[in-house]
Length: 298
Image 1: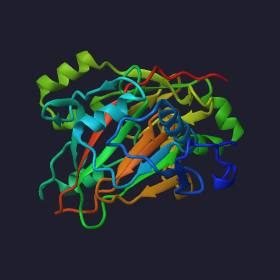
Image 2: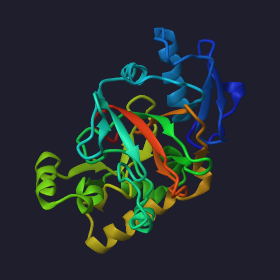
Image 3: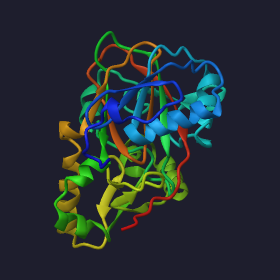
């Protein structure tokens, strides 16, 4: 199945007794038939991973998990990592506490600024090895709004004209933590982050290490420039690529419900948390699974 083949239940693999229901024609699926408050058998973990690789983002409903449950589930898929800027849940350094725009608590004065700064992104691409995935759990939800959208970066890449694919194959782009977080911290913290997280060069097209699919791997939050091209050409090309993710044809939209959980493949997607619920609170918690260094294999 290539990136643009519509997902259907008819050709789905066996998921060890779990029900995996596609949430959209391109990406996303809801998994039912398991209780995440309980330890999972290896075959169930393998089935969840298979569903994630196939659908790129999976959703669970009505999972009133504890912090311990959250950490345990994330660790089934790899080691966990914290975050240098976003706050964590007290006593649980593996669990990020996220309000509004990735940790910025909303107040009336900053809502117009935060909304304008809200962007499609892949998490922590400023790291040499960006995260494999994220597991997000709803804690406090508005009565409506606050949806999260996901986009399939393999499907986006698949639709690029062949001459553009050929051009991108040898290119890298710079990713910088200060592109996103630099304007919300003081100079001392800026210098600390610059020393700890210098800009990273990643391939513009990333080969998924498990599926082998090629994925577009630039994002508005952390990608600052495409390397190896004249400045004007590089800026125009980056703008063109970033614009592609906005097309609804590559997206699925998740409407949160109490105790819902989302698990996305950070190597294969971008996401966008819609900030349309002010002045109501929205609080979510995330564990982040460590990844590996991106590469491109033609």
